[in-house]
Length: 364
Image (cartoon, rainbow, N blue to C red; front, side, top):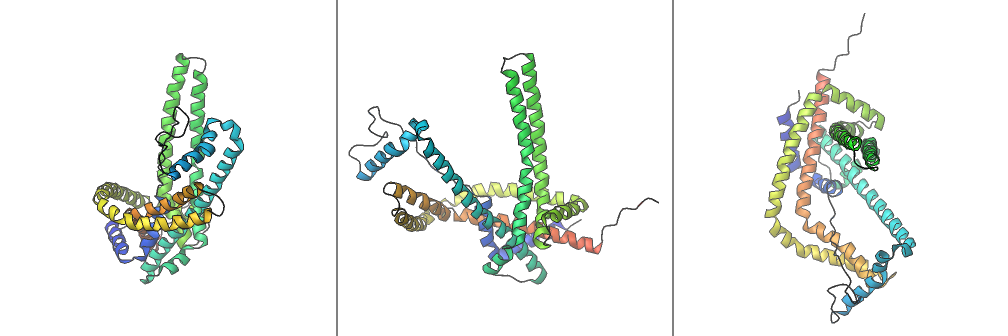
């Protein structure tokens, strides 16, 4: 059995004494646990059709131009979508390409950072050496990061059969009730709901198990340079030999995560004055980047679209600066969790070296 207290204490020590890890933790918090919130305003036309409600004829020229632009370019897309099918297709293609680019960038940052944290902690435990961010990035920029992405991808693909089964149950319930509600249809709905509950419960349990196993799969890929198949095989073998210790550590971290969630909510309230103070530097950064985007966009389009592009570029950076305290705290949580599992992996391997597993006795 591993020493849980020793591992948790050591992970806490590494967190506060290895500051370079914080940068990678923030990157993990941004790419792994961050959410993007967009604020959109609803609008309606006036009874006379002169623009959006609330637009005063005596308002500023910019607002009048913005209203006219929306009336000319946006409103017709929703009033007569069948007449603007090509436009909708181009919008869909543009959003798809944007999503692919952003997803690719985020994936690179996430998995390089994750591999870097695992290898930096392991190196620190082996030699006591603390590396710089540049050196840590080089440690993360490796085939191991790509293999870790493949591991998560394959685990995620396992959800597809469950989704297909749930969709099938829903379709079956719909088809049986299409002809009217009767005893058979009611029984079909009850059976579908019961089956859906069982499948959802099985899916949740499977994802919990795979999430636990993923900690071992990824550390074999990052620290042993094994391929994806060998990482799955060797990670599963280590888990089987140490399933009690691994399960207990997962439960401990689950409890830590619950405490962290409650504490972060309380801390967010106390950080409101800090958010207010950071609003000014956040605004400066956002304005500088928005003006740069405005200048570039003005070469290809005209107002007010240039201002919309500038706002879309500047707003995320404003939120990033203002929310930086929460990102730092989230980064600490990411580093602590990763470090705990790296130390757990190391101790399990050390115990196996001291007392290697005995092969099963073969029959005579």
